Structure formats: structure tokens, C-alpha cells
Length: 168
Image 1: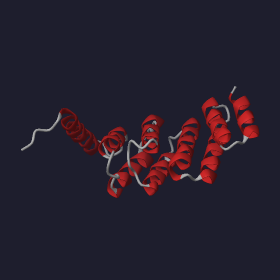
Image 2 (image 1 turned 180 degrees about the vertical axis):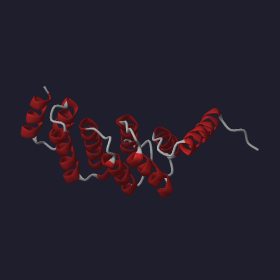
Image 3 (image 1 turned 180 degrees about the horizontal axis):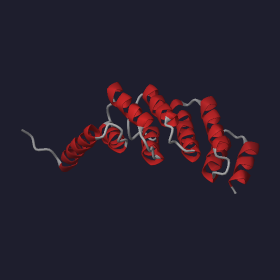
Image 4 (image 1 turned 45 degrees about the vertical axis):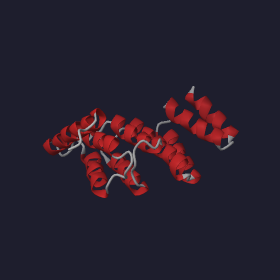
């Protein structure tokens, strides 16, 4: 038997720990997200893994945006592979959670808009989602700056200027 390299062994050990944590608590989101992040870099995450993650996101008694944003950004940046349907399921589950705050909704909308723009090349939905993020939390400078960046890329200087002003 071939000896595992340190990175392979570390991934295997981490996966075992994540799976153990997931069995202990059926609502625990963090190990499910971490499992997807480390195990699906070259192969797409299977539907059952995504379905379980979406269920956890929807049912979590206290959802934190950080892990969901790390996952969506990892997918957007090409570090993790999840189907477009899987990404939509993850996004919708996080948005459906009753504990998702207004600020979290704005961040999720913005991240999902970025995914639509960079991965799906779906400009219309990217703009709609990014504008929805800015409307969801108008006091959030991040949502406004994300809208300004997208508007600049689309050469919509008036929208970019207004969003930049709103961010200040």
C-alpha cells in the first residue's frame, strides 16, 4: 500500500472529523461546509452532499453567514466545485433560515450576484441580485460598494456614482 502524503492524510483525517461532527449534530453547518470546501476541488460535490448541506442551512437554529459566504466565494473563485443547481439550493436554504438577519441576507445576495456575474455570466441576474443586496441593507457600505463595482464593470457610471455616494 502506498503511503499517503501529508496533505492527503490531513484531508482524510479532517474529513473523518467533519463527518463525525455532522453525525453528532444534524444541524451543525460548519463541518458540512468544511467538508465540501476540502473534498470537492476537482470533482463536483454530489447531490446528496449538497442536499444535506442545504437542509442543515435551512434548519440551523443559529445560522452564521461566514461559512456560507466562504463556500459561495470558494465556488465562485473556482476552488470548490458545486453545480449551479447546488449553489442555488445552498443560497436559497440560507435565505430561508429564520435566523438569517437583514445584513446576512444582503451579504448572501451580493455573493450570489457575484457568482452569477463571474461564473454563470448571467448579467441580468447578477445586477438584480446585487441591487437587491443594496436595497436589503441600504446602510451597508459593502453592499453599496459591490453595486458600484458591478456598475463600473458594466459602464453604468451614474449607478456607480450613486452607489458610491450611498456607501459613504
